[in-house]
Length: 438
Image (tube, helix red, strand yellow):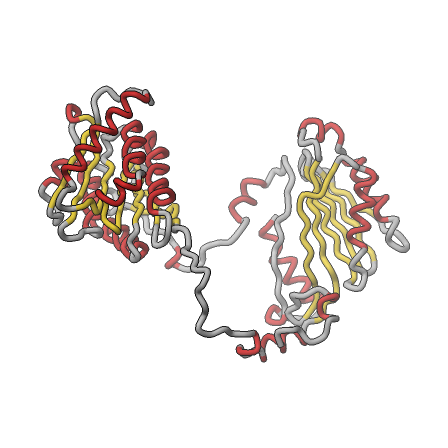
């Protein structure tokens, strides 16, 4: 149980007449066991916990995620990307079905011009012919609309369907259209009041970042707004604005104040870095240019006493049912006993088989210990600690263990030193003398 760790730690510190100020600890969670009765309580106490009031998320108010809130999100998003003598393009569904953003953006914006691009009638599925004809029609419409001013912002209306999304991405993906129709700095905005539409709208906006904007500054932000009844709306913005992060935070903060909704930023992506092969740094810094006094003092003070190695093993055939049939407490005990023949004088194994579906094996000897944990299916953890001078014991132990259960393989291995003096290096590293950076 995780809640007992601190008590055990304090008891060990007291037993060696030390204090919490002179000790340090960390937790390694490598595996577990199926069927443990306290798993629900363990889940609550596992991992980091919020302790500062500023870390606690603000609860949503009792406001309902209604049309007014959706309009506020749309208006706030558009306000931060305004530019004079530019076009705001709203891409809608078919004209016969109306456009949610029409009334909201037709007059309530500072843009010099607002254009509404309606989806072509007869777009069903991904019929190539009808989509190509629609693309040609929309291209001609946009060429006329952008004769004087170019498009600065594209708003994907909630009424726009998936086929229309494919068409506008293809249309603006053409280099000639990108140059003739769009401003140098672009922004694309999409809201998803319906969860069923959120996935493809998110992908569409991200494709603008990856395929059309490409090089930095290029960003995509994804945020979800929720009300007290867990109704939610997702907002995705892709932009070439160098101040995107600042503006994105301002949009979210303002909307929380205006609507009372709770926000959750789920993703922020950047663009590709622009590489300049001939660029030369004006000044280079070496390790000797930095103050290494405190680092060197820590290096010299550390005393590695032990080496802890954690092996995570899994059945190589990947069949959990077959693994469960093959692995057993008796087999794991036999493998552990075989591996312990490497230890001079041997060691007694203490087994715990009443914890869950797997088992826990513990062996202690002078200068070392090993803990073998089986989760009840196809996963086994070996946690072995030896004297620092015997760094090869762990590898030999693992090989001997696998000779008894050859179907298992190592999927992960962690090695860390244990000792005093804020030890962070293995004994073999400290033997190298003064580090090269000192």
